[in-house]
Structure formats: C-alpha cells, structure tokens
Image 1 (cartoon, rainbow, N blue to C red):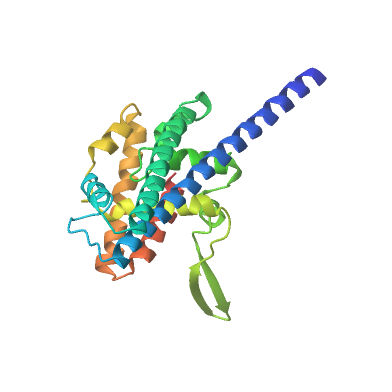
Image 2 (image 1 turned 135 degrees about the vertical axis):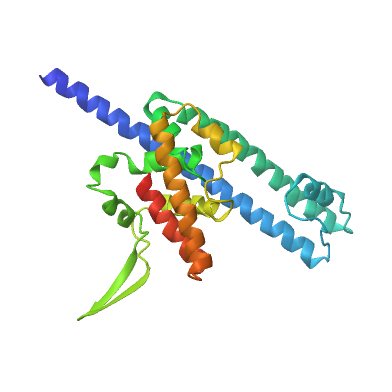
Length: 253
C-alpha cells in the first residue's frame, strides 16, 4: 500500500511539474509577442516622425516590409531604422519557432484530444487552447460554468443598495492571462457571416466527432449572433460586446 501511495504521489508531482513548465513556456512566448507589438509601434512612430508615410492598405504585409527596407533616411537615422528592423525580424523568427514548439507540446498524449476539441471554436487555436488547459488544470474543480466565468474575472461587479442593483465593469479578478487570451479570441466573432466556416476552421474541426463539431458550431453561431445583436441592434460598444462574447466562450469551453 505504501508503495502504491508513493507511486501515486510521484505521478501527481510529475503532472504538476509538467504543467508548470508548460505554463511558463506559454507565458514566455506571450512576453515575446508583446515585445514584437512594441517594436512595431516604435517603427511606425519613427516613420511618422520623419514624414515617411506608407500608401498601401495595411501594415506588416510583405509589401509594407519591402517599403520599410527601401527607405533611405539620412545619416544616423538609417542606422536607427536598420536596428529597429533587425529587432523586428529577430522577434518574428523567434515567435515562429516558439509556435512550432507549442504545436509539439500540444500533440502530447495528455493534451492532444482536448486541444483538438477546443480548437473547433472560432478564434481558438493551439496556443490559446493549450494555455487554457495548463492554466486551469482540472476543470472538474468548477461546480458549473457559472463558477468558471467569475474565476476569470469576466463577470460584472455589483453595487447593491437596498432594492437598487447596479452593474459595474467586469471584476478582472482571477486568472488575467486566460482572460486576455479569451478576450482576444472573442474578436474573431466580430467578422464574417453567421454560420460561415472558414477553411482554417474546417481544417481544425477535421478529425473530431460529429457531436463535438455540432456543439462547437452551435456555440459559434450563437456567439457571432450575440455580438452583432449587441453592437448593431442594441448599440453597445465594441469592447462591451467582446467581453460578453468572451464570457460565453469561456463557458462553452
């Protein structure tokens, strides 16, 4: 009996160590993503200060990068721009390498099936799915979905006095990392027609059971419809609708 107890303890210890390592890796990746976002802002601000204006439709496309590399500012400014672009390239390459590593981690037996199912939702890809799984651990510790959204701080606070009940902004309590990832994923519901499935989504859903795909499709249609109803029908602000969608997405997951 003592031997079995030691074996079980060893397995539990290994599980939590394994989960903690993946959690730190995913957070490290997101730190580099923030650094890339910052360097992009710095490059655009540098160009704006020196009246270098891009005439294309959108930034950070292949055409935009070619335009940046073709710029020839005078004297030391050229060296400054080159250093900015070198940092951008280094961070972009690093993120690509880290994302490949995350795909490898998600393919492990303990995560593979859950990742494949959760990727059936719009805006939820491998990085977001694996982050939710390692940050949350065992979903069974939440009695119901009504307990999960408050844990992420995605529910509004209250200011109650006598018979008056005033709803405030979301509490932002609990796990900030997952809350931000789900809010970012919720932005995807602001685009496309209700019921439309992109090639990427169909590819991610491939290999799942009809029951899983049907459940995800039901959620995707409901969330996209809810977003459009709030923004177009009720004139709610984009951020308010986005958070409401993120809250329901968390519950569906």
